[in-house]
Image 1 (cartoon, rainbow, N blue to C red):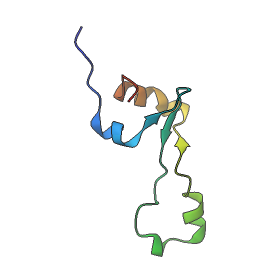
Image 2 (image 1 turned 45 degrees about the vertical axis):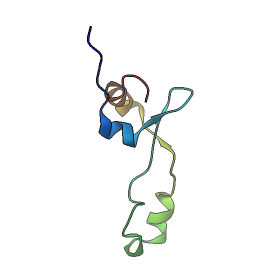
Image 3 (image 1 turned 90 degrees about the vertical axis):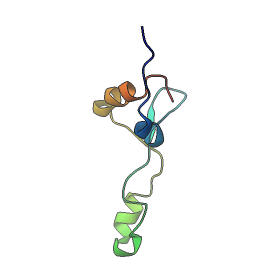
Image 4 (image 1 turned 180 degrees about the horizontal axis):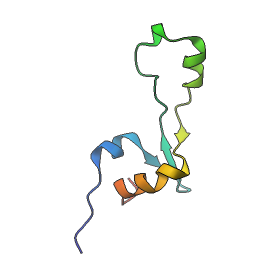
Length: 67
């Protein structure tokens, strides 16, 4: 059987933890922060969020070797 290819876009966005959870970064924290309210900036300040169970299987297909 042929090797599976890792999706390079997913590799840059997601990482696996030691326990097998999929870690991601929250959106809306990269640029244009001057226009956003303090509430928007504080709720998006979590850099290490986890992928919920509905998307977990999809991400695992994109990253077959646990990159």
